[in-house]
Amino acid sequence: MVISSRQNPKIKALIALGKRKERERLGLMVIEGYEELTVALQAGVQPTEVYFCPDIMGGDQLALLQHRGLHNAEQLELSREAFERAAYRQGPDGWLAVCDAVQTNLDHIQLSKNPLIIVCQSVEKPGNLGAILRTADAAGADAVIAVDATTDWSNPNIVRASKGAVFAVPVADVSSEELLPWLKKHKITIVASTPDTQTLYTNIDASGSVALCVGAEKFGLTDFWLTNADHKVRIPMFGTVDSLNVATSAALLTYEAVRQRSRV
Image (cartoon, rainbow, N blue to C red; front, side, top):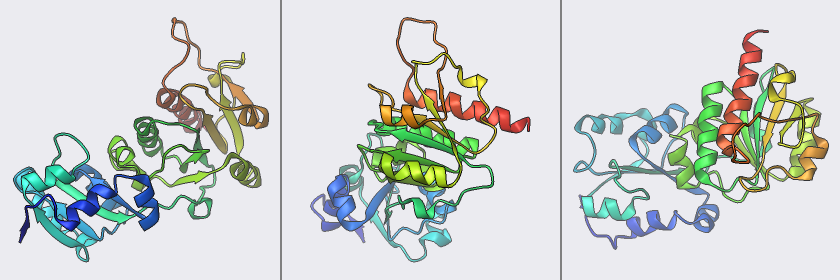
């Protein structure tokens, strides 16, 4: 049976999950996109529902329905009209799935012997958080932790911007006051990015256990993190714009740590 009505209860429920309040109420999230769903399945995510539209997707992609992670999922075919109604992005590729929301507490983060963590304070734009997740995944970071967050990790736009990395990289959502003692307990050096210092980010030792902290797009890190940081560092700038994009800053800091670690 093909669902073709845009008023179908399943379609309405999918659309409702676009709202944070509904995601948090149900503990669910939506995965949109073939690549994103593939990454989620590789990470062990087991969706409860998967929606597909052969009129939109590539013909060879139907094989994904045989993935073992989808064996227990309800598989529902949608018409083009119904799918485009349920989709969050323009130009959808024919894949949607519903799964449990990602875990966001500190307890599930398993640290390596030499942890590399990215801390994002009050970063507002899902696109920036998604880009930071892609950097974290590429760099092999232990986790990305949002403090004093203004959005949730299950936001469909984070799933999209991260290309599914939100399922591959452990994440957390905590307050600054909760994270600081956790970092100290695990003896993780805190590095805060700010333009108000003379120390370049390349001039500190980031080869050990380290948390790289970046702040909100407009205001940067608060005094809480600047005061409690072991190192305050800046990225040199020579133009007229007063700051880099937060995701770019996080990438530079992260790959400096990767560079130093590769030499140890």
